[in-house]
Structure formats: C-alpha cells, structure tokens
Amino acid sequence: MYDITYIYYGWGYAMTTDTIFPPHGRLMTKLTALGPYLRKQQSKEGEFFFDCLASCISANKSPEEREFWGWWLVLTATDIGFEYRYDFGRYDAKGNWIKGSLPAKHAEAVLKTLDDFYVKLTKFVKEDCQLDIQASAELEEAVLGSA
Image (cartoon, rainbow, N blue to C red; front, side, top):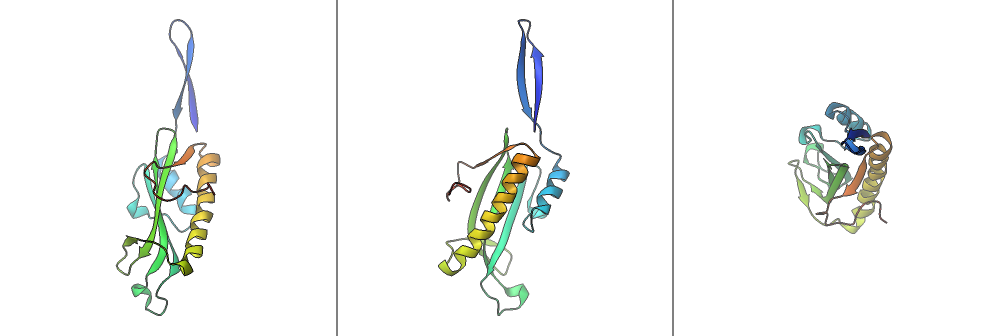
C-alpha cells in the first residue's frame, strides 16, 4: 500500500510516495493463514521464514527420527515491498536444514509445494498489501514465477 503525500516547495507541489506495511502482528497472522509454512520463532520484524517438509525420506522411522526433502524461503521487507530467497535441501532428524540437490524421485513433490505457496504469497503481497515482491539479487536458483 502506498501513501501519497503532496509537499509544497514554494514553486509548486511535488508528489512523494511512501511504502506503508501492515503492522508486524497482522502480517504474521495473514502469512500464517497462507499455509502451514511460517516459522514464527525464526521470523522477526521485517523478515519472515517459511519452510515445507514436502517429501518424507524415512517413513519407516518413528516420527521424531524422520527426515524430509523440502524447501525454505526467507521473505524480507524492502523499500517498495518484499524480496525473497529460497533454497532446497534435507530437513534432518535434529530439525536442521541441510542445503542440497533434490533426488529425482522427490523433486516433483517439493517443487509443486513451493510453486503452490508462491502463488498464494504473491497474491497476498500484491493484492492484499498492495506491495511489490521480487527475487533477491543473491538468489542462486531460478526466479519463482518466471517459468
């Protein structure tokens, strides 16, 4: 959402725009509603951490010992909206993400969950918040939504 302000400079008025973000608490509530992905304890003011345990590696193990293939995404506030960066890897039994290539048999399930989430996230940021969303310049993978 943009706040348009007119400033008088003596010779006339100039228009400035300031980006206005919803309050952090409201953003946390709305982002949580997008899916079971937001990790509140790993998020902070202006930065939101999402992840998805998309495909179980070790279904025969007890639940606390299971590992998963999946993705994580960090959404960071910028001057005009948000930028994102994401990566893929394995979520180990200790609860840590280990960056790595997805095995072919798990790749489709993982990519589908990320694509589905990205559509919801983009719609929320652009339509509900009326802000911009773009890929981080440091993103190593392909930009989401470009394919």
